[in-house]
Amino acid sequence: MIKLYSNFLVSGVLASTILLCPIAYADNGKLLGTGAVTSIEGAGGGGIVPWATTASYAEKGEWGFTVNGNFADVDDFQLGVQSLNATYGNRIEVSYAQQRLGLNTIGGDLKQEIYGLKVRVAGDVIYGDLPQLSVGVQHKRNTTFALPEAVGATDDTGTDVYVSAAKAWLAGPFARTWVANLTLRATKANQLGLLGFGGDKNDDYEAMAEASLGMFINRHWLVGAEYRQKPDNLGFAQEYDWRDVFVGWFPNKSVAVVVAYVDLKSIAGLPDQSGAYASVQISF
Amino acid sequence: MNYFAILLAALALLLGSTTAQARTDASLYQELGAKQGISDLMAVFVLEIAQDERVIHHFDNVDIDRFHRMLSQHLCELTGGPCEYTGADMVEVHTGMAITRAEFNAIVEDLITAMEKEGIAVSTQNRLLAILAEFHGEIVGQ
Image: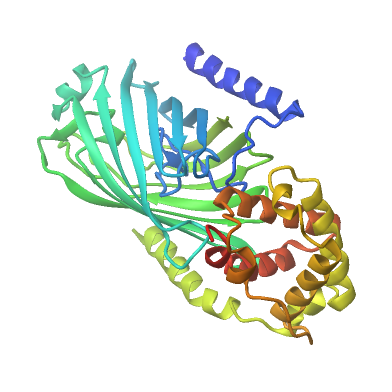
């Protein structure tokens, strides 16, 4: 637990250092906010939903990198995520994430690693009529499998495949800039994969819908909500859909900070898992 | 599931409303301070471009006074003002310049900075940006 907090603290300190530093670390060619933030699975996106946007501010011919920390604290669990993300040319995004779910009430923890790849196949989030369309994969490997196996999970590895569409309206309702993202994911992952893949109740891929909607109050502040459908593969406890409402802050192209209220319903039979979420993203 | 339905409904509403938002009426021209306001804004904008090393090389042989006059005239027309743009179309103007996506965005950032300096409201900024973003396809990569 201390390690998690300290990692998050390091991200925070690093972020504030960059905030106070006048040098532009990320002088890349995309517009502020269009790199979005980093989701809990390491992909560029919202908090719980990967978006069709590519991470960082790298435009055509440019490289971009992000370092991220995400943290969620609900009644009986704490999720900590650290991730790295490399993007080339507003086209290809490669990510690596480590997730750790602390089981405060049950004891112990669940961990996994996620290797992600996302490719923008068409469109642009801001320009043109077409939404930005991307396809992605997330290959997940449990590093702790004893508990998932004990509750009926079939595999300790799994691969999610998703398609995402993202669109921004520069002058939407209230003459504010709005952004929407819809993601369809084929998955067997139980609780993101932290409880393994497939199970006694269902062992097939299923399609899940995930959506985010946000409004930029001005250039720097984004408010919005997300919803993520989840499969229900394990007989021991029902798995529920997740949702959150968030506030994102984009002070410059180097840093993005998100705070959110998450409602994760019941996890592993423990009801009413709601609480706070925060993430820090540093872009290079 | 209810929550999801609300999100989708909001999305549908958004899609529906954008067609209405795309129209231009004279109110945007007035919000920008009419002819004088647009001229002032374009003067600040041109100064921002002049200091922007990412794009300034494109303006090496440009007659700045004429550029300012044409920009102001074009914006006046686009925002519903009583002007007629007499310059060449955007494809013709930018042909051979090979403007990149990053350079287009740099110009957008210069315009946003200029609008901030002129104290233009976010809603007005967004309505202008939405109109100008339509030219992306005609300007980039020509």
